[in-house]
Length: 229
Length: 239
Image (cartoon, rainbow over all chains, first blue to last red; front, top):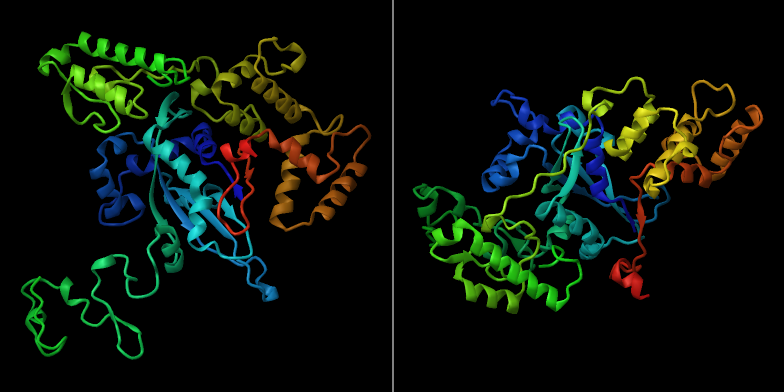
């Protein structure tokens, strides 16, 4: 396994004059609130700020996004080989820099002919250790643009992946009856008696407003079932 | 308490730490205002529950002090101000791109940070032979690197140094998927076309070695082929 330590990379961002002033771009640049131009305009980001006001006070703190997916190095030979790169991106930078190749840090490279499946946790433990220190204690970092030392903290905001990879990273199963990661064990899905296929019939009425006529409809959904909760 | 005392967790040290902690709390104004109660910093309470002095002492002895609570901010202590870095007189103080330095030199300056770069700006032509003896190992490395940047590839070469050529060649290798054998042959050919006594690297491993000091390295960690565990930290030491 290859591991590329995260902390020196974050420190390097702050030690370069070309990058360090942009690390507070998301907060210092006022943008048109009606246009979403950066993840910081999104509801998830604002919700995080409300939940952790202490963290969001220091504008130098880094927000990270994690991206993982398997890919086949030797696809053209018809072999199946699954190599898992895990990529972290700092979201502090302006959108023009954020998604450039030099700011996507390849952190973990899991080799191996087979898919790691749920054992990907084993390969991520070094990254998680580093993220834990970055979240709880922080790292003393020198900021070139402000000319002072500060405690650099970082948070992993979200992960970007497809549904099978989501199952691996979150640990929730992504097949069978309990597949929905929102409902989890409260799911109303059931498997059909003969074909054993999972059916999601009548799972969506619960999300309607309480006075919606569908909730009182006895004929169109499960027979004689009124959903009042 | 833990590292605050002397790093090793001897029982006696820890006890003295607890005593010091309680003494410190008593000396604060806040303590009397709170009705002689204080937030319990044991592992279970995590500074959320108010308790009396002797209860807190007992809890800390039995359960242990809560982790990463180095500055007793909940008990009246201020977070220490981080040591300011002296940037007067260096380019770090002026907040500008250092145009007098080349692109690669800037890269190295970014790597070592202001404390060492300061020396360099005072005396740009400094070499390891002029160095003071009390420089740390890291600084020594940095000077070696800086010599590699400053030294021309051959006598009279204007636009390239050893490090810059290595970096360019390695980036070409990774961009165009050049094989290692091809890389070696190309580098050797480049070296042969240059005048004698050049500093051109001859192999891929040499090139990697000369770039290694720039930092941002990678760790190769052995792991179980089935993905059960990684061999690192204590596990490696035991084996």
